[in-house]
Image (cartoon, rainbow, N blue to C red; front, top):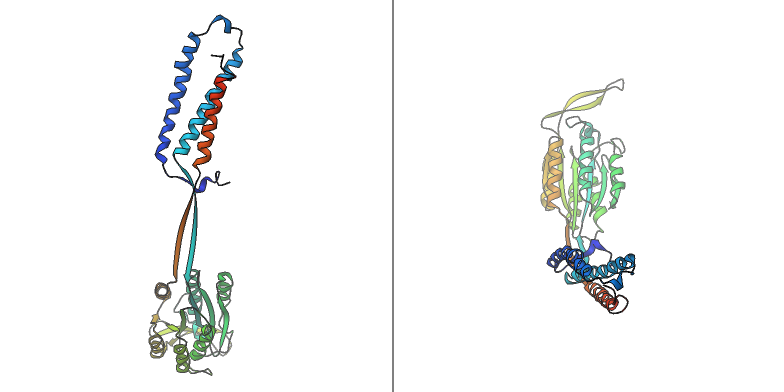
Length: 333
C-alpha cells in the first residue's frame, strides 16, 4: 500500500516532471505528421482491412507508448516513501493548587467574588498544563485533598467547579493547606514539584503551624508560589444580620504578606499580590511561564525508494509495444 500512500510520497528529483510537456508533442506527431504519412502510403491491397481494427491497433500502440513515457518520467523523478518517527521526551512538572475557601473568600472586591474569580483563573491555568500532573487541595479551618495529582483535565476541571465556601469548617489554616499539598507531592519522582498557595487571610487555626509546613516543603525541595488575594484597604464582605439575612459590609483586608513572602522566598519561589481578577490572571500567567514543561521531540525520517516498479513497468510497456509492431501489427500500417 505504500505505493498508493500519496500523503507520504515525496520525489527526490521533481524537475523531471517537466518532461510531461513532451506528451502533447508526441500526440501531435502521431495524429498530424505520422497520420498523414500512413494515409499517403496506403495501397489497394489494404482497402479491405477494417477501419475499426486499424483504429484499435493505433490506439493500443499509442497507449502503450504513453504509459511507457509516463512511468519512465515518474521513475526518473525518484518517488520515495517517507516515514517520520518521533521520539518525545517530556520532563513534566507536578503541581498542586492549594486554595483558601474560607468565608472571607466571598468578599466582592473581585467579580463576582474572590472564590469564583480564583476558580475561573485556576481553571484557565490548568487548561494550559496539558502534559503535567495537577492536583487540588482546599482549606479553610481544615484542609482536604479535592483531587489528587492527575493528567485527566476533565476530572480536575469538574473538581475545580465544585468548590464552594462552607465545604469545610470555617477559618484560615494556612499551615494545614500547605502541609496537605506537600503530602500530595512528597512521593513524586519528577524533578520539578511546585505548590501554588492562594489565600486572603491570616493563619488563625489548624493543627500544623505554617513554619512547620514550610520546613517540610523545603525538605522535599518543593517550590511554593504564594498569592495574596484581596484589594487594598477595605472590601465588601457578606455578613448575616440578626435575622439571617446577608448584608454587605466594608471590612478591612488582612493578608499575612510577611508569612507568604517568607514561604515563597525560602522555597525558591515568588510571592504575588492580586488586587483584582486581571492581576490574578497575570500572576498565573507569570507562574505558567516560569514553570514550563521541558519537552524534546526528536524526528527521524526514513526513505524507501519506489522508482524501480515504475521503471520496470515502463520497460514492459516498451517491450510489449515493440513486440506487437514486429508480430501482430507488422503487416498493418
